Image (cartoon, rainbow over all chains, first blue to last red):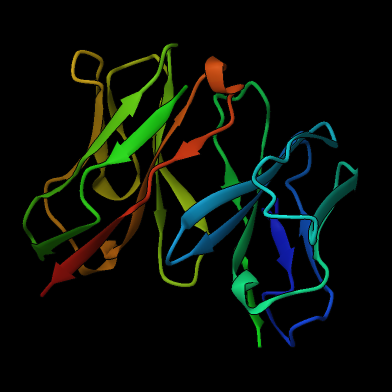
Length: 114
Length: 114
């Protein structure tokens, strides 16, 4: 299997622009997580999907952030409008529910908002 | 609620000397515990996991961890550090009380001196 695939790997944009990050989980996995990592706040869980349904979005910072999972093989995290404080590395991870919770991470999307 | 505390933000060792990264957890259920490693500009990779089987768990690259329920600890050790071990290490807990959503520690940065 190719593992969790994220795109783009790097994104530089200007404040106010819309940003869309994409994730393809491992085939057969039914749980998907979006995390944000910064030096100041460490690794933060943004949202968790199970069987394509958002289960816990309490970590989503504000209404500017939205996430979707239209099918089992694709998820997006959208920021609109983006702000400089959104600059971070965003990770997607997938797992198989009932498999003791081991997560498989993508390589991350590094976002810089100018 | 589940929680995990990594007792050191940075650990510095010389190549060839033992490594000890400390982790304490809190859980009202039978937890699953994990250690993940993150090399610079990479995603997180599973080092090892405990899921109620043997209390001494062996992982990749010579690392191991021991689950001690009485001490609520899951410290990560390696007999001899290698330069390639320099990375960020995360302790993670998952249990039924948290709906098996993993909770990450803040991370420990391992520095290896030649």
